Picture 1 (tube, rainbow, N blue to C red):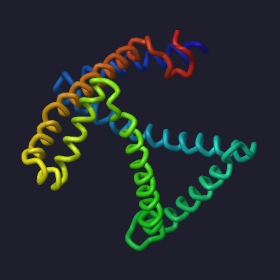
Picture 2: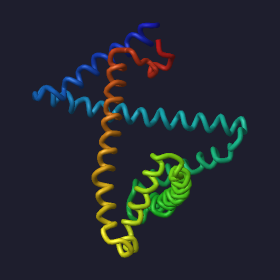
Picture 3: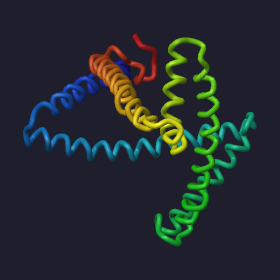
Picture 4: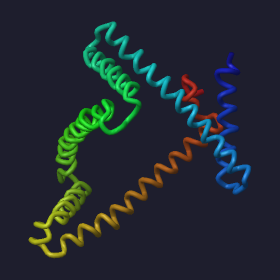
Length: 212
């Protein structure tokens, strides 16, 4: 039983990890065909993963409704909404102009997304207010840069202080780009380290148990 639950998944991760890592460095027709075939299998697995995810979602919210936990009414709204959208999609045959599913998407889902992003703007403004307090030299630099960028992006700022727009563009193109590249390099190195740990069996959290 330990072989099927632990050893076999680790062996599959090791073999496939090394295979598809080497695939990017071997420009050969066999290698390209292997990647194409793996992409097809990836789509099949993703389809089953969606079914598994939907089933898990329904189970969690069903138990919440059955136990009448806090906020169980929202779980009921989830069930009703899912059934309505699923029925509309099957009945209308997909997203098409004038169909019921298209109407739900254009006038319900898009409206809800706009509302969500509108609420998000207030949270961002609140976080920015707390972050821009000049409590340290670093926070003072952040506050000054934010003021310059925001003022340089509107015509009034350029009108009040000539060259403010160019300074704002310089901050966005030079220091901001450098910081973004540093973050991307850090994320990439972290991804590489995690991948190596998974391939060689050091990281085993995906097996469902604690690391050994």
